[in-house]
Image (cartoon, rainbow, N blue to C red; front, side, top):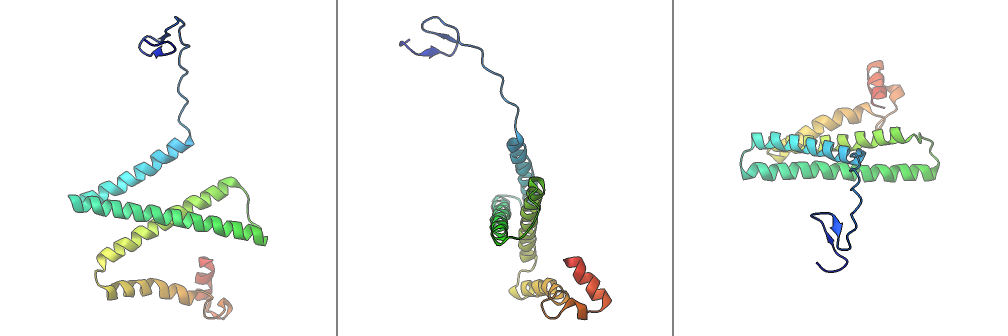
Amino acid sequence: MPVGTRAVENSVTDVGCARPPAAAPAPPGWRLAFATGVEDIRDGIDSRIRAAIPGDAGSIASALITGKAFAAGVRSLIQGVVVVVIATILGVSFTHNPLKLIGAAIVLVMGSAFFACLSMSIAGVALARDRLMGIGQMITMPLFFASNALYPVASHSKLRTSAALAED
C-alpha cells in the first residue's frame, strides 16, 4: 500500500495508528421530514392516477399533473414573497411572526397546487372548449357580482352583504 493512504477494511493507517471511531450519524432534521412528507403526497397522487389510467399513459399523466401542481405552488410562493416585499417597502403593517408567515406560505402553496389540479380535472371532464368556458363562467360570475367590483357592498341586500363580507 502506498505511503499516506488508509486501509478502510481494518481502519489502520500504513504507519500503524488506529483511526478514531466514527461519530454517530446526526438525527434527521426538519428538512428531511418535510421532503419525506412532500414525497409521500406525490406518491399518493401518483398511485391514484396510475390506478385510474394504467400503463404508459398513466405514467405520463402522473408526471404532468404532479409537475403542474408543483410548478403552480412554486409560482405562487414566489408571487407571495414579492407581495410581502413590496408591502414591506410601502410600509404596510402585518405580522412578522415567522410561524404565521410559514403557515401562510404552506396554505398558499397547497391552495395553488389544489386549484391547479382542479383545473386539470375540469379540463379532462369538459373535453370541448365551450364546456370549459361555461364551467369557468359558472364559477367566476357569482363571485364577481358578490364582490365590490361593480358597486359598493353597502347597496347590496343584507344576504348579499353577509356573503360579500364572508369572502373578505
